[in-house]
Image (cartoon, rainbow, N blue to C red; front, side, top):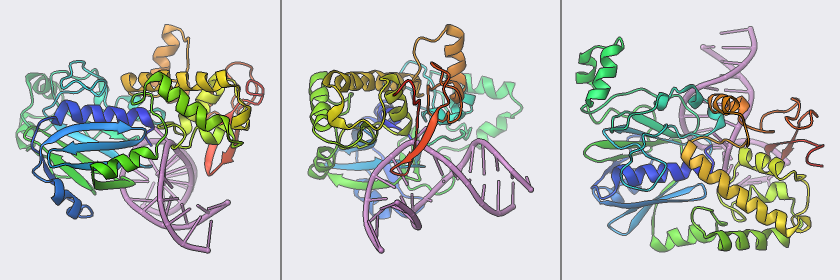
Amino acid sequence: MPEGHSVHRIANQFQASFLGQRVEVSSPQGRFAEGAKRIDGAVLVGAKAVGKQMFVEFDNGLYLHVHLGLYGSWDFAGDFSLDPTTKSANGRMGQTNQRGTDPDTDDDQAGGADGDSGPVDSAGEDSWKSIGAPRKARMMRVGKPLSAARLRMAESEKREDDIDTEAFPPDPVGAVRVRLLAPDVVADLRGPTKCEVLDASEVDAVIAKLGPDPLVDSPKKGSDRFFERVHKTKTKIGLLLMDQSVVSGIGNVYRAEMLFRARLNPHTPGNEVPEETVRALWRDWTKLLKSGVELGQMMTMDRLSKKAYAQALRSRDDRHWVYHREGLPCRVCGTNILMEEAAGRKLYWCPVCQA
DNA sequence: CATCGATGTTGAG
DNA sequence: TCAACCTCGATGG
């Protein structure tokens, strides 16, 4: 599951690929037929993320609200600009990857399977990208491939006719809950935990229940809101970081990593964490979230050598201090990393560094 | 090929 | 506290 950075990347991708375009909305799988009907044919006028929730706005005053949950993912295909890093409508960055998935786990990404395997094309090539749960990319080239794409095809074993036979839009693969189709780009959603159409007031109600998001709230307001919730409860900080009403976007990976980075014991009651530490946590989340949006991966280790950094981006196993490292020696003190279940989720930490 | 597990949330008991 | 939701890569045979 994508943590906050993935959702921001997805919203950015929608801005870059669909902004201002009339969209054909359907539910190939059928489970969202009614909702799709309400926004079908409307113009997409915006997309934004708040924590792990995404809202796509249409010109008829309605919004598509999506939460990927554990397995959800979006697949983009067609001829579009790849740039989940910024909100600009055109990305030039070539971006990265695609995947968006996230993190670590993902590895797959790491493998570059996805899309990105390479440095992607910038030109809008194609391709596709899958953002969401870790997943191998389905390499599909659709639409009229640009020269770069053709070149690649020529170098591979694929024949040109493969290109000609790939029509746009591609047929939905698997259970596609929602398909957003514009003239040159298509986005398919599968496996979401939440997919619904809301009006403006309902969107506000959802957002009102969420804690601050560094990419939505100002540094001061965000820090204040976070501190306000943390300092007056006895709930353990390890639980508070996962509570979306306390702070938005943090998931199981970022939680464990942030606690280690702050050298904080997960069991410390919120009201016993020094104010400066609480505010430092907020600043760290801000830093990690921005980094995740740019990198398309959860890189939570600092000060790595050039070589180690490159390796970390390649393998999820080298990207974190404690996450998923039960029984392995702490990278700082050598003590075996512990794992315990908390609220149904696995929490990893170093009993010495985070005493 | 069968089973497990995962970056998450909700709602029942 | 736990099952359910729902998908697919990883793992093991």
